[in-house]
Image 1 (cartoon, rainbow, N blue to C red):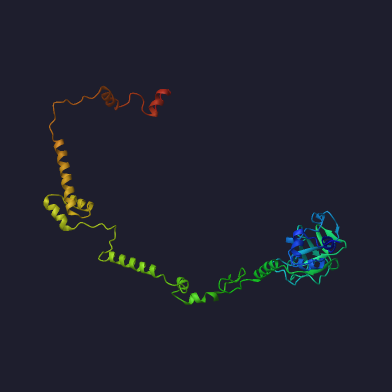
Image 2 (tube, rainbow, N blue to C red; image 1 turned 180 degrees about the vertical axis):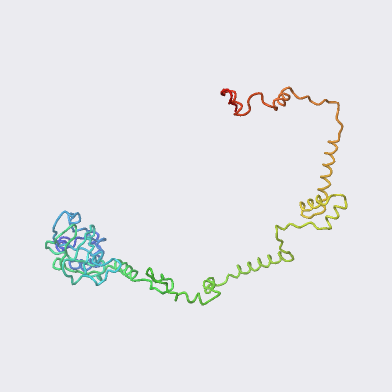
Length: 346
C-alpha cells in the first residue's frame, strides 16, 4: 500500500503539495510520520477534502468515515454570544468543521470530555467509520463517533486568543472615560459625581484640558502682541454712543448766522457735514448760487411769444365738468321709468 492510500485509510485526505510539505526532510516517510506533522498544519493549506458534498448540501441522513476534520470554531449555542461561558443553562456546543475544501457544522450529542469552549481552533478530530446522523445539514456528533487528535496551528491560535482577550475587555463604570452608571426611570440622579464641579465656584473646564498640555510659546507671544496693538489703538479714544454723530456747537452756528444765513440752514448744514464748518459753509454757498439762478429765471420778463390757447377739447372738458344732462341719481332714473298713480307724489 502506498503512502497516499495509507493516509486515506486513516482518514487523512491530503493534497500533493500538503504531502510534500509534511514529508520535507524525512527519508522513507511513513504514514505515522506524516500524520505527526500534519496535525500541526492548517487543513485549509494541505487538505484535499474528504467529506462528501451530499453532507454539506443536506442530501443524506447519515455519513461514515474515516475522515479527519479540523475545528474552526467552538460555540455554546445555549448561551448568549456576549457571554458564552454562562453557567445558568446546560452547555450545548456547536462545532464549525472543515476538511480543507468544504465546511459543515456538528452539534454536541450527549456529553463530551475532550472538547469544550477552551479547545483552540486548528484541533483535529477523526470521524470514525460508523454511521453519524445528519439532520438539516448538522452532524449529531456523540463522543463514540469521533477521536480527538489535537493539534497546534499557531496563526489560528493567536487570532483566537486575541479575540478572546478583546471580548473580556470591558470598561468598568466609574473609571475615566467609561460610560455613566445606568439610572432607572423615575429615580433621582445621584449628585455625588458632581461634587467636584459644584464645590468650585469658579470652575473652568479649560483648566482641566490644559493641565497636561505644554503652552505654545510662539502662539502666546503672537497673542500678547496682538492684544498690545489693540490696546494702543484704543488709547485716547472715548466711546461715542448714538452712531458717533457730533452735535453742532453754538459757536459754529453763530459764525454761520453772522455771515447771513438763518439758524435752521446753519444747523442743517452742520449736521449734514458732521459739524465741519468749512464743508457746511461751502454747501450753503452752493445752495445760494442755485437759489439765485432760480430767482433770476422766475423774474425774467416774458418775451413776445403768445401764450398757447386752450384746445377745443380742453374747453369741452371744462364745460362737461358742470351739471350732467341726464339723471344723476338712481331716484331720478326710476322716476322717469315708473309712472306713479294720480294724486300721489313721491
